[in-house]
Image 1: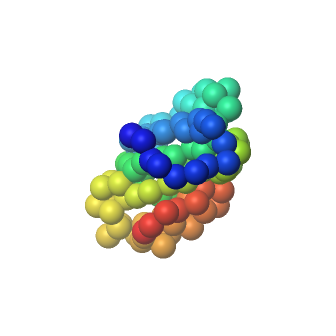
Image 2: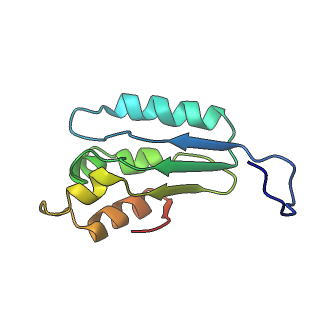
Length: 114
């Protein structure tokens, strides 16, 4: 896609992550490997495009994944949007849209819309 708009830099390196589906069966080692691989790519921007959690936000916090996501390095930051799994599970205890948004913010991710 070409966007005819002046920019201050010639290239922008964007890393996209999607469908991580964090649950009780995802291990800290798996997430750390993902974070390390992303950081080796020297991204200008990291975008996470939905379904970061599988059905509940609790494992994201209780297993310390929010701290691991804080380690993502990108010149302009990490941005995240909700996917259908974030929306589909909001009727569960401690899993409101606000709970999920707060958890993502605790991981230094900028939530684009909730």
